[in-house]
Length: 371
Ligand SMILES: O=C(O)CCC(=O)c1ccccc1C(=O)O
Ligand SMILES: [Mg+2]
Image (tube, rainbow, N blue to C red; front, side, top):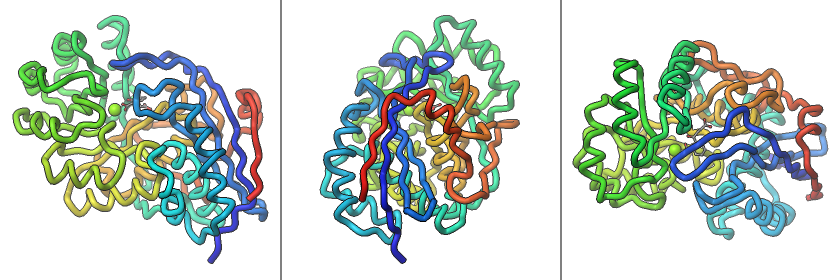
C-alpha cells in the first residue's frame, strides 16, 4: 500500500526551559527546534521534532544545519520518491551522509502519520509491547552540592526509577561521595558527555566504589576503541551515547567490548527505523538499552515513549514529565510520570494532541512544501 504524503510543514519554535540545563560542555536555556508536520490529504497529520541544539557541542548538527538539510536535500528527495512504509525513509535519505537529526525529525513525522493512517499507536507500529515504561531523571550540573542533593531527593520522592547526574573533571568523585553519603542505595548513574580521556583511567577507576548502574559516555564523542580499553579495567558498566550513530557503530562496540549498555536516541541515529534496528540487534546479543533524551517537548517525548515500549528497553530512560522542563508543553494531555512510570498511549500515532494555541504562542515562523 502506498503512503501518500501531500505536504510537509516546518514550524520553527523557541521555548524557554524552566531551568537551564548544564552539562560538561555548557548549558541550554532556550530550546530552538522544528516541529515537523506530514500530511496525507485525507485529514491525517503526523508530527516530528528536531533535537539539534543551536551550538554543536553534543554532535555536529545545529538548528541551522537541520533546516538546511531538510529544505535543500531531504524534502526534495521526498518530492521525488514514493513511499510505501516509513521504513523506506532511511533508505531514500541514504545518499545524504549523516545529518541524522534532520533525517529523524522528518522520519518521525512520517512514522506518526503512518500509524495514524493504520489506526494503531506508534508504539504498536514499531513493535512495542509494554503498556507502561519505567523512567528516570537526568539532573544537570548544579551550582552547589546542596542544590544537587535537594533535586535528587525531590526526584526520588516523585518515584523516578533512577537518578542520572552529570559529571566532569573536578565535579565527580567528591560529588558522588556526598550523594552516596545521603542516598546510599538509590539506583544511580553518571553521564560525562565525553569530558575525560584515557589519561584519566586511574581517576575513573575510583567510580567503581559508588555502585553505579553505569557511566555514560566518559570518553571522546566519536571514540569506540578507547572505551573498550576503559571498560576492560573498570567494573562499572560503560554506556555509549554520543559514539553511537548507527547499528554499525553498535556492532563495533559489541565486538570490541567498548560498553555493556547502549543509550538509544532516535535523533542521534537518524530516526526510529534505525533505532529499532539497533534495538533488535541488542535484543539478539542481550545488550541492555534505554532511551535517552534531548530536552524534547511533548512531541519528541511521545515518540521516545513509543520507542521505549519495545522489549529490549530494559532500563529506565531519560523520559521525565513534561513539567520537569516546561512551564507549558505543546501537547495535551501533558506527559506525566507517576511513581516513575509513564503509560504508553494506545490511541493512533503518538497518542497525544497538539495544543495549537501553545504552538502558535512559541512559533517564530513556518514554511510549507507540497510533495
Ligand atoms: O532529560 C533529558 O532529556 C536528557 C538530558 C541529557 O542527559 C542530555 C540533554 C541534552 C543533551 C545530551 C544529553 C545526554 O544524554 O547526554
Ligand atoms: Mg548522554
